[in-house]
Length: 346
Ligand SMILES: Cc1ncc(COP(=O)(O)O)c(C=O)c1O
Picture 1 (cartoon, helix red, strand yellow):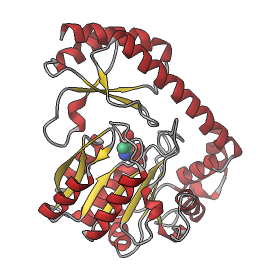
Picture 2: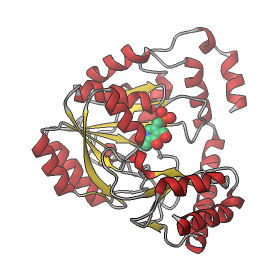
Picture 3: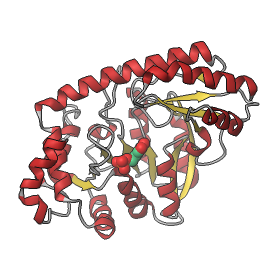
């Protein structure tokens, strides 16, 4: 990262303005990233379909404002990424929760929700969802795409964990759509650096101009220096090595935390071990005093996230989200012991 910043600092990017939609080479890199998953018979995205964003969070706001609009319904998985719920609230759209879990949403229920609400947009994370870790099957992906197309709607696919696969490769649904029904967001925050606020959006067809108009009004363009740094890092041979190392680290940390919880906090129930991403999503016994458990853990130096924030409406029960990407995996067994004790009290 530091070498990439030093190289960028010596170049033109420090004193010039990049194109609004992003540096052409970075647009090409994002387009190829998605195009590499495109099946035969589907037209892969072009560099010109990409808009470089200052993080995908701002892209969510732009898409919700430009494709849903204030007062209109947005179908959204529940639970889902809290930042998406907040972006929806700020855009003034009406979030309509679609129950989702370790296997993703029920496509029949989704179909009925489109029918009932007249919604034209679904926000979802088909790969390693935050918080559930869900990865949709190919069949579910096909059925959701088919439903979205039938209703003349858009799927906003948030591929936040594209570089965080552990036992499985992410398979973006957007790669199977060349009809402009999927708006695809890919963040580099977690895999490159949180200091490099760069993400890519692939948006094709008539929606593109609407989304671009909002992106321009919101942020105008992304710092060329940050784009140069991102491009430099992801095109180095060391990038592949880094991703392999990351995968091994995540696998080891995830397994360590899963084992520690099984041993020390057996009442915390894990529906499925995630095949990628950074989090475990635990269901707790119904009568759990969630805020008491969170407080007791915190007092013992263990930070756990209460699950309520990830529900766009009423939570279906007490949950915790545990992150296994932190710097001290050696402390996981002790952390699990603290959680187990707190659950026994709460
Ligand atoms: C599911 C999901 N989408 C989007 C984001 C925002 O990412 P970015 O850093 O690119 O704004 C996050 C960040 O945690 C996330 O978890």
